[in-house]
Image (cartoon, rainbow, N blue to C red; front, top):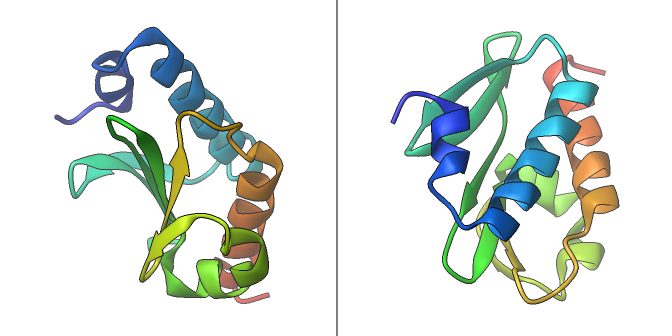
Length: 114
C-alpha cells in the first residue's frame, strides 16, 4: 500500500475516524512533514528524519514516536501496553489525542534540534 488515505480506508468506520484524527493532528502540527507508507503503516518524516508512525490493528492503535518520544512521556504511557518505541492505545478506551499531540510536538522539537 502506498497511500495513507487507502490505508485508512481498509478499516471499520470507527477505526477510520481515529486514524483520520491522528493524521490530522500530525498534519496540523507538522504541515511540512513528508507523508508516506513505511513498514506497512503511515509514516512521517520532517527534515528527512523520521517523525512518527501509527497503525490500526484489530484491538488497538499503535503509535510509534521512536524510543525518545516514548521515554519523555513514560509516566503517562505507563498504563498502556508498550514495546521499545511503541505504545498500544486500546480501541475499547478513549484515545488520548492530547497526549498524541504533545508527543508529536516533542518529536518535532527533537527533529529540528530544539
